[in-house]
Structures are given as structure tokens and as C-alpha cells.
Image 1 (cartoon, one colour):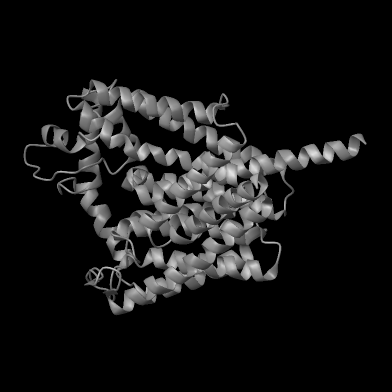
Image 2 (cartoon, one colour):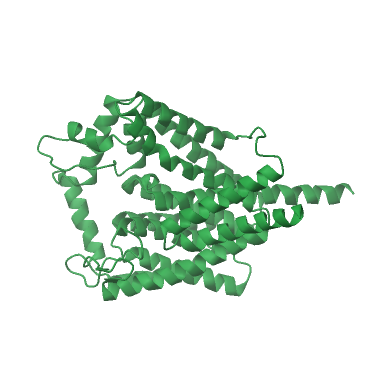
Length: 420
């Protein structure tokens, strides 16, 4: 009976992880529900195996996360609104997705299935988003989409998300993740699936007319080509040429927006420009360098530190480093950079352990590309403050630790065989 219960709990956790990777492409609420259920199954399994209250092991990455959360809590308590600030930290529970996904991924098949399901779901939602660009209909919210900027035609897509910027950033990260998977896919059908999913998710992101996500994608693709040299240029460059042509035909005003935006930023007069928001946020951070203004208090303090002629108010700094510095102080920002540096180092170590053309190496490369593009979008949009995209990143980092455990297990098995 106990064995059957354990099997049910393990299978339930796996199913919920699969459910998360499918649902995250179209529903944040459903994605969080699957995450919560997966976490519950993991806790039940740990209780049955009498491992729930064992002393946890933290590496440098985990230590920086704990320090980040604790410092944010301390900033909340010291802030003028401790109750409200502490409540604002509720999103920090998303960090639990990392150990949850890592624990569930105890078999390579689970890892691969998650990625295949994600690619299929991402393709389907991208097709819907591309249809939105031409129809202007948002079926999930029953509204009409915002028209493309002047000089273009079509509409600014948002899939089933509540905001097009969130959708654009999410699908830019998804596109580069899928590109990394396609580059090392060990079967022809997988290569076709991942390259197809990359093309559609990239195009869906482009049709949001989100300048930040497009720049992040371009930078990610450039890093990918730089990393691999000439190995994958043939397929990737050919796809890029096609995507640029399609984007130029279907979204002709996209490139004009960059020129207008650059001129606006240089003038520094528009109250909604990024440079104006960043200057105001920097003043706030420098005025409260140790503990910040407290989580949840950015908006109220923005009014105090903006220019006298500025009538705009924002809830975050549109830049994660400035945003965290403003609400949590410079130590919180350093802890944030600390866990980013630690996870990138861990992924690079993982990549070095694998053979050059191994599919698992491709998964590690994909996780690195997805993480890098997330960080690039966070310079322009404060993506870490966006629950939908942040939970997705936590799932990817959970995959990193799941992969690391599988590699260690494989190395141990190989050493055992050699010793015999």
C-alpha cells in the first residue's frame, strides 16, 4: 500500500510539472496552480521518506537567495509600512519552484518531456498570437487589441496574457531557450519541432512591438552564434533572414519605433522615458542606500524624487537593479547580482562537463540563453518584478539543478563501472 501511495505521489508531482510547462505559455494562474500542487506532492514525498526536516544544503547560489530574501524582509520591517511591505514579499515564494523542479527531475525522460511539451504549447500560442496581429481580436479577454504604431498595419499582440510587454518578454526568453534546444537536438523530428517553435515564438514576440524584448532576442542570438562559431550558422542565419523579412513586411513600423525612441531618450524631456525613470529611481536608491524605501513603497516615493515638472508615477524602476536598490537597498541589489553570477557559473560548469554535440549539453546551453535573455529584458522592464516571467525563470533554474543531479548520477555510475 505504501509503495502505491509513493508511486501516486511521485507521478502526481511529475504530472503537475508537465502541467506547469504547458500552462505557463498561456495562463499564469493555472501555471501557479500546477506549481503549488507540485510543491505539495514534493512535501508529501519528503514526509513519507522522513527527509522533510533534515538540514538543507545550500551552495553559494542558495546562500545568496536566502540573504536576498532575509534582507528584503529586514527592509520591510524597518520601512514606514512594515505590514504592507512584508505582504509585498509574497512573491518570494516563487523561489520554491527551483527546489521543486530540481527534486521532481530525477530522470532524463522527465526533463526532455517538459521541454517537448513546452515547445508544442509555445508553438500553438504563438500561432494564436500571430493571428491576433492580423485580426486584432483578443478572445481570452473579449476586447480589441491596440493598433500597431503609426506607419504600420496590424495590432500589438499579447496572446492570452494581461499585458503585451509581459508577453513579449516571456516569448523572447522562450524563443532563445528553444533555439538552444534546436541546435543540439539528437533527432530530426525534435530539431524540426524546436526550430519551428523558435521561429514562431520569436515572431510572436516581435509582433508585440516591444523594443526591449526584440533587442534582448537579437543580443541572445548574437551570443549564441558567437558561442558556437560556424557550427550552427547555416540553419540559424537562414531562419533569421526569413524572420527579418517577415517582420519587415508584417510589422514595417517596428524599426521606425527604435529611431523615435532613441531621439526621445536623447532629449530626456519625456516624463515616461526610461532615462527619466532611471534617474528618479537612482535618486531614491542613493537617498536610502542601506535598507531602501521598503518593498511596496516605490510608487509613493517616486513622487518625492521625480523632477518638479514630471507628473508621471511608476510602481517600479523599469530596471531590476535600480528597482531592488530602491526598495531593498544596495545590499539587496548585491545579493541579487550574487545569485545571478552563481547560477550562470553553475550552468557554464554544467556545459563544460558534457560532450560538444550532446543533446544534454544543448539543454544546458538553452537554459543559459533563456537566463541571459531574461537578464537583458530586466534592464529595460524590471522583469524580475513580473510574476509570470519570474516563475518561468525559477522553473528553468530548477532544471539546471535537476540536470546537475543527473550528470552527477551518471558520473558516479561510470566511475563504479570503471572501478569494477
